[in-house]
Length: 284
Ligand code: R1P
Ligand code: URA
Image (cartoon, rainbow, N blue to C red; front, side):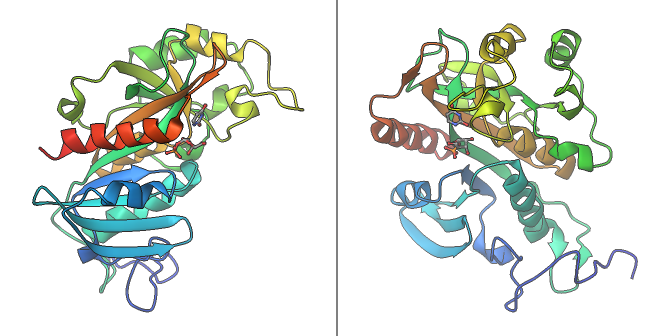
């Protein structure tokens, strides 16, 4: 059959669930909170009225339940865009592929994806323990170069490409803005910014412990190019949402101000604040 996927391409577990997420279509809601840290999942779902589903495999922990009567899922992605590649493709398969027949469905279902993460700011004026919503994102990890038809250009991307001095990382750049506008949920956010997503936490984000990073001015240079904050997932979430027809928005709690060398004095309290901030807005 024309659209039938081979067993090697769409891999399923013995119970018919998708390979890494270990989920069946009925296990997820259309509104999904994505967090990096698996420990953040129960910290979110403890606010649900009730939790109906708890499943996990590797770093992917999922709780689905209701909050103020609305069905909602919270899932951990682990760290990095290579995990987001798995999360986005398998979430999409759960709603847009008939898993029993391994055929594409004719009706498209669009998910609402809310990344709730942490980041470091490279704008010295952005204060720690505040929420920063990503409007534009630049990916320096290279994932989207493996997908055909990914093209994106806007004022931010044009400015960045025209002015970036980093020849070595230029071939790995790609850009996106929010996949479809679900920014109304977060219209009162303190900061709206341009996020850079990296394939690492240390040298890729300009941190130098015993090894030297690309140069000593990395943070200032990226800030001058318009970047406000650094993290490790949003570029892939925005770009794959765009291609797959889902809606996505990231809010990151700023836990580090890299330019001032400051870290949140109580990042546990700050995380709790982030969770409440998001839940109050996405389920009214
Ligand atoms: C690095 O410590 C991790 O924290 C940030 C980065 O994107 C990376 O995943 O996000 P989370 O707090 O959601 O994991
Ligand atoms: N997450 C990151 O990826 N970088 C930071 O500086 C803080 C959180």
